[in-house]
Structures are given as structure tokens and as C-alpha cells.
Length: 289
Image (cartoon, one colour):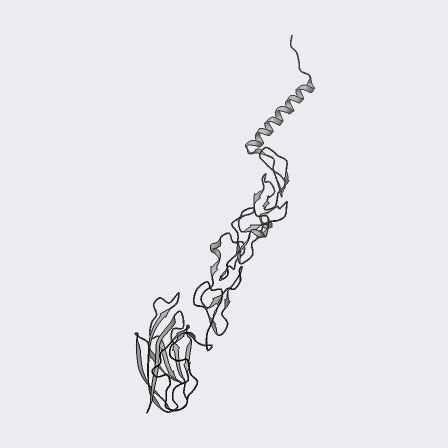
């Protein structure tokens, strides 16, 4: 005859089948979610544990998610991406799932980075000309102090500008002179080279006190990272308030009439936006009239 299973054994078998089906469903994505800040350590281990450093999980997730590159988290049990701390300004990181701020790398000296949470070294930008970045990890560049300058992008220090207003590259035969009263011009026959920053000027205090006819000659060239198509003359030559433009072509030579009295010859860079000017073989020679 027929034999019947005891009710208790039948119930045990049904529970076993249900557990097997549940386990199979979990393995194909039907897992019961963990609380926020927790996740399964592996697909086959469905014991919810706290998310480790550098990870987080939201409510309803079965797995912990790595903090994105440019961020980090040194706490366990994080429940949202907002708990991943961003690398500070001046730094970057390509590491996902970072557990400490030590993965944030400082931008090199001469560069800056003004935003937080950056994930690539290319976000470190070179300091523009006229500025510098002396330290690593800068969020901004500093303007060169008065009397200094920087020509190149990415400078970590500014160069000292002699005489405060102009940059001396080299002097041949003589240096800039103090005022010498009388009709003798000591610059005559001596050539000088110097460099004028954007909009800057150099002053010469040698011209004679008496009225004079002065011939001034020089070779000029312009340069600078954004000095592509300079327009107009390079220089203005001034005796006090009376100025003459020069430098449409190089070399340049011009004869000026200097009024009587103690005057100063000023050589100005007329390019006020992008161009520096190299002044080579500069000479002025005055004869009293």
C-alpha cells in the first residue's frame, strides 16, 4: 500500500526547497539589500557588513561602491557618496576607493589648481607670465612683486628687474650713468642692450643740460607667449613730456631736439598688452646747439 511522509518531514523538505530557491535567486541578482553603509563581502556571502574605508553604499544596495578618483574616505560604514572627501585645491588623484588623503598629489611649483576633487594631473595649470608659484599644491599664483618680472608660463620665481622699471640683459662698454651736467654726452659711441617688460620704460640721465640735437639708434624685436602680431611702433623716445615714436622697422635711427635744461631720456615699450621688447645696440649721441 501507499506510505505517507510525516507532516514534520514534509515541512522540512518544503523549507529546504524554499531556501534553495532563495539562494539561487540571490545568486542571479535577487539578493535582499543591505542597510545603508553596509554590503555583501562577496556574491556568495550574503552577510551584510560595514563598508570599508574608501567605499560607501546607499539604502537598498547590496554592494559597497568605491569613492571616485579625486576623493577619499577614511571612515567605515559610509552611506552616501557625499561622505567621500574631495582632494583639496592644488591637488589631484587618479585613485578610486582611496582610504586616506595621502593619495591626493600636490601640483608642481609653478602651477596652480583652484578646484577641489580633481582626478587628473592635467588640471594643474601653469602660472601665467607676470606671476609665479613658489610652492607645491598652490590654489592660485602670486603676482610678481614690484621690481621683478616673469616672462615664461609656469615660473616658480620672479626675476629681479634692475633699476626697478626695466630689465637689464647685458651692458656693453658702459653702464647707465648718473646725471652729468655740461654738453658732453658720455653715452656717445657706447652700445647697450636691455629688455623692456610689457608697458615698462628705461631712463637715461646722461643728456646734456644745454639744448642739443640727439641721434638715437637701436635694434628692436618683440617677444612673449601671446605676442603674435604686434602692431605699430615698438618704442617711444621722450625728453620729459615731448615724445617721439620709433620702431616701425629694425634697425631704427631718429634725430630728436632736446630742449635746454636738466632733462631725462625715457625709452618706453609701447606694447601694453602682450609684447616685451628686446632693445639691442642702443646708443644716443647728443651735440649741443
